Length: 204
Image (cartoon, rainbow, N blue to C red; front, side, top):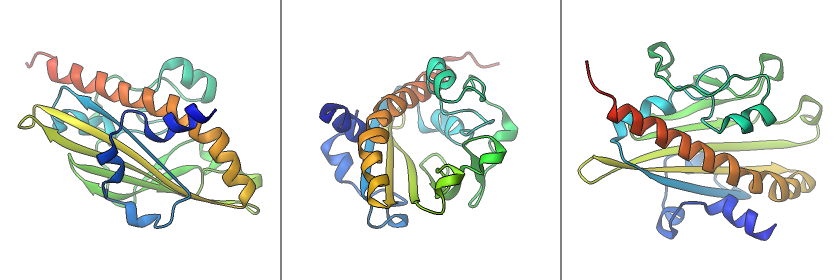
């Protein structure tokens, strides 16, 4: 369990990345949990960015493995494997669904720096029956750093969250953080695969 919690907080990231200040860190100023995950992608930021802005339920998915989608999100379809232009247009305040409409679950775009940073924030990732008794404030930051004169990209994904009451915080540490290892690892690999394929596709 301790190893899964460690991986859920750090998989793929370096000590320097975990210590770095990222866009959106100020939105949840005193988080109870911070996770950092990262991967190097053999493609420029311009090939990675289109996949990030179309994430979400009923949009591009979260690029996790299909078995994960079927196990945890059976009502959602498979993650996208092609760019759809009409899903590229997001802005500050855009709502990104993360569940069927009746759940009212999703995230809002809070930072948008094209080809560099996308930060989403949510306080709705709770069952409806919990919302009078528990609270959650949660950000996801997706940050792209060009490497090798822009030929490769370091993709850094950070979550910051604070929860109430204590029992919900404890369940997050024991359940959500270990699960984040599987989910985040799959998401990183899924974005990398798609961005690298996009880069190697013949033009014309």
